[in-house]
Image (cartoon, rainbow, N blue to C red):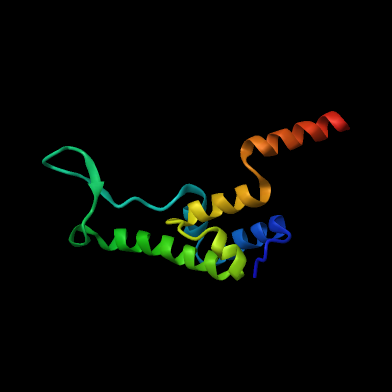
Length: 119
């Protein structure tokens, strides 16, 4: 269970664990959930499908996001799960953890630059 310590090791283990359940879980974490949308015939705009419009594949794709969110939430202790409360996708959870524990892309680049300059 992740308690905020040693994020890099935990991150790597979660990648392997999610892939061992279903390789598509890792894609959902990295790329975001599958969209279940359709072009509205009347407005020609994209909208979410209604429950009646969902295909079996749409339902399977929605289940992947729920499954991987369950995996991620159950791998956290109470304090860590509170930090990502309200996230609506596995990718959002993952990106938020990375920012909390590794810093933003800008912060990581600044750290790299400082290390390069130092050595």
